[in-house]
Length: 248
Image (tube, rainbow, N blue to C red; front, side, top):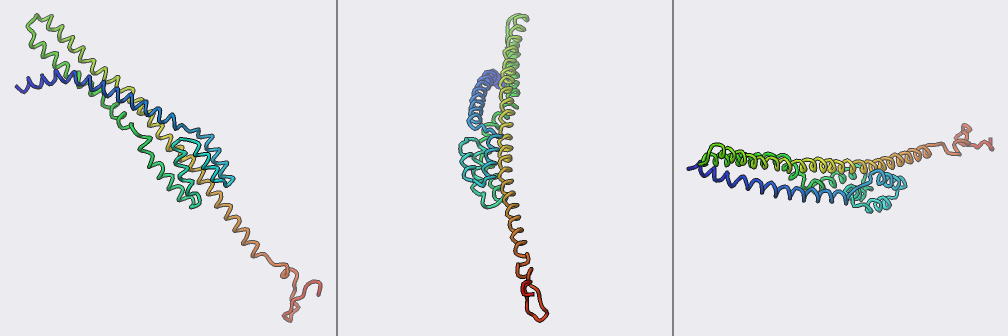
């Protein structure tokens, strides 16, 4: 009795698996298109942006650097703009804000990757499950057939061929998902690397400013400790009074 119910479920399950794979395929294509459009709208020319940012910071023009970054819709520009607001607080503060900005936006630029990775890994197994159910159904029909052996074998072969379609569809659904997952995962890594690159430009500018300030303070100390003109020209005559060279 239980076996008959399982066979009945198998007959329904083979068709349901195919519909499930088709539905997952449509959803996967939608996510792939959405991710492609997301990254396309937020492309960053790293070399140009880095050079413009470096030139502005060398000129100590933080406002110009912010204006350059705000022209771009890239994620990296948003992160570095947020860090530049802490430019006066020092390098450690800027570094912390950079890390915070990347963490806040990671959910945005990694959206959909979990689904694509899961689908790419499991769609072939879903298709194989549909194939198994189809084969069970085919052999069940062979056992119930009243026709000759050749006709019954023909029905089994036809059922197995239909069942194997589920495996093929599973692989067909998995391949684009895996490719898209790898591509968008690489783009997400590139976003983090670009943020680090632009952040290094800001940190290097702060380090250079600190070095220049240190040189200025050192020069000031040397001037204060240099001998005065009176000391250089004056001389002690032995009785506690000082005479200039002219008086001597």
